[in-house]
Amino acid sequence: MIRVGVIGAGIRGRMYSETLLQNAYAELVAVSDTSAGAIERIKSMLPDTVKFYSDFKEMIDKESLDAVIVAVPDFLHHDPVIYAAEHGLNILCEKPFSTDLNECMEMQAAIDKAGVKCMVAFENRWNMPMVAMKQKIDEGVLGDIVNVNARLNDKIFVPTEMLKWSKGSSVGWFLFPHVLDLIMWFNGGKKVKQVYAVGTKKVLASMGLDIYDSMQATVTFEDDTSATMTSSWILPNSLALTYDLKMEIIGEKSTAYLNTYDQCAQVFSDKAENLHSLGTPIDGTLTGNSNFMTHHFINVLRGTAELDADSKKGVYNTKVICAIHESAAAGGKVITL
Ligand SMILES: NC(=O)c1ccc[n+]([C@@H]2O[C@H](COP(=O)([O-])OP(=O)(O)OC[C@H]3O[C@@H](n4cnc5c(N)ncnc54)[C@H](O)[C@@H]3O)[C@@H](O)[C@H]2O)c1
Image 1 (cartoon, helix red, strand yellow):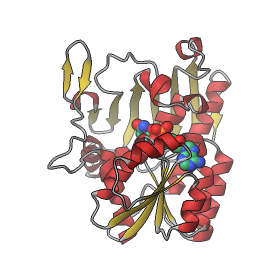
Image 2: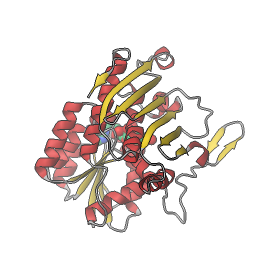
Image 3: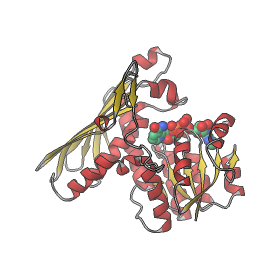
């Protein structure tokens, strides 16, 4: 059994914990969260065998673990990743790997020194339409990818209600990691040559949140192919699904479209409802992309799957998104990587 501890018992920590309970090769040993309320909430969902800690270091020190899953806010990934690596534990870390490039380098150095495996939760690699698209691209149906237009937006609920810590992150840090990873997964990992980005602060700023409503970035790759990424955090709460991810991929031979919003079952009455058709349990088994990703991590540790979404890709993803923020902060300065 792969013995796992989960760090952070919020939305993602709960999802990871429930998923681990459904994995025949994993044992959810313990969960840690600094918030007593978060611990209380998750406790009611989990069996009595699971232990709970307010301090992840105490959890790592006291429990005999093989791996941890780091599911704390975007800007707090550094300390648990370093501590876990220093204690020889394998890691699944949420995206973004970090919001700071120096932190990322320290995390990667600790991982390399310890020789542990570290995967970054780029969960769209386990999202069915993306998986199908990747297969087509690998078969050569599109040819070389010339241009990608991608947009991933959230309802305003996300920065104003769902994430208590949105002020410490940004729409770019929360959403671009997914889209950039997909673009680079699809285009075979071409290196980024330069970025140009702009951002708008209006709606959220008027609500006391000094963060971007929307960011738009143009990314140029080493061979002069390019991609645009747009992410907004102010879509109306009347949207049926919390997020809206669409991509247009223009290849030398074909053009392809991805649309996850219309994949969901939607019901409109006096409110809009998304019936979770992307992860509806079937015979009790969770079927969402993040569930498949969690099982993949366990398979990597069992030696039955290859680690591809690794921390080196996480570091590079952060490097590009740092440059995007730098460009936007400078009003659209072109940044060469
Ligand atoms: N919510 C989503 O849809 C989603 C999707 C993909 C990825 N993510 C990523 O997952 C990460 C977690 O997001 P979330 O939505 O679960 O946030 P959340 O706010 O629901 O949960 C985070 C939890 O971490 C806890 N925490 C903070 N510091 C801690 C520490 N030092 N030790 C232990 N626990 C600590 C908080 O008390 C909170 O319960 C973020 O990096 C986010 O970008 C979230």
